[in-house]
Length: 427
Image (cartoon, rainbow, N blue to C red; front, side):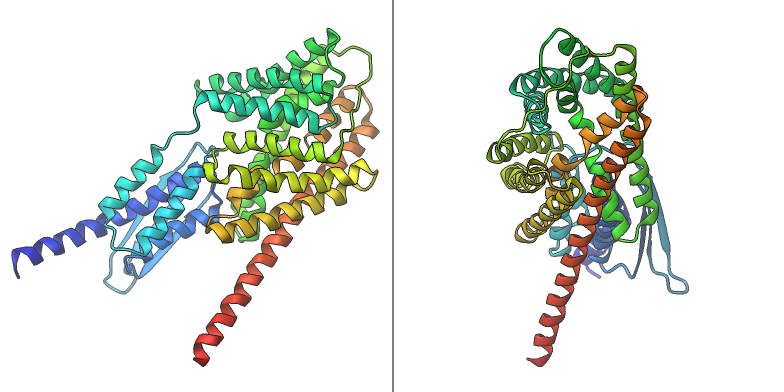
């Protein structure tokens, strides 16, 4: 054997030894960035299968990845890797970049070393700058206040309060404090500032001001990923995501509720403002633009995602504007969001979650959650149960809409594949 051939064989052995490291690293970045469990498992498996590993088993949870790969035949060698992923945030651009890298690795002769270098570059990808994220938080807070029956003064107040609240949350996160504590403290701070402004006679709707400020903490990501994980059969991960969404909801409600109890607002009633549907459509575009920046979706998808969200919100707002069912409006709005997200995903060859997560935010029943806590504090338990049940059913309607559209999309793709395979066999 020539020295050149020996060098090639050595390189292949080294690549084989590091293949598991590459796969688990890709899965770790995706899981840490908020990808669904099944997508993490598919990415890890695809990397190993791309280099003809005969046996690959990957099992992921919301906090870790387990990988076993090699030759399962008698006398073969199997390797196992376990990677704990304790901290999960939302960075959809990294999910997109890892997806692209997996496709390139599977369809080319890219070496494992090149793959690891590329993953390091992906992991080093910067979020939007702090200044841009603060502007996004301002847009999100102001326009979601307007979307939740607030007036323009309420939107302006929520803009400033939302920026301060988001800045506080970023500062507390640097102390590596539990995420739910961060949300609790931040929402209490938001409620405190809102109460001060409202009691000074500023603004017409305390609810709208607070909702705008806390929107950035609403569990839209957890709900979306929970539905997609449950649909994929990942019951453990889906249940964990549902639990996460419930805990986030409790943290938000407790933070706001304690402040409302300790420092009640002025006795004047909230003023509900109903703005025209076309104006609400524009508000939803700008507000979702803020959400999209916060969750760091690729810049080229900022406008399409915002338009998807605005379409879904316009459907929902039309129902409540004309006095129709909020639940049915929420369901239809979520169906439209999921459908348009699936179309964009197919056209761009991206994950539908990339579009769904920011676009579903306007429909998350934050105002219902706030009003439930408010009525509990005031001792109106019957009303609290009614409002809370409606908020719960709206969340269920969102989940059902995602389930229906995702299922139909998968059936459609299966039918198209079957037709294509049949045509190829006849040829």
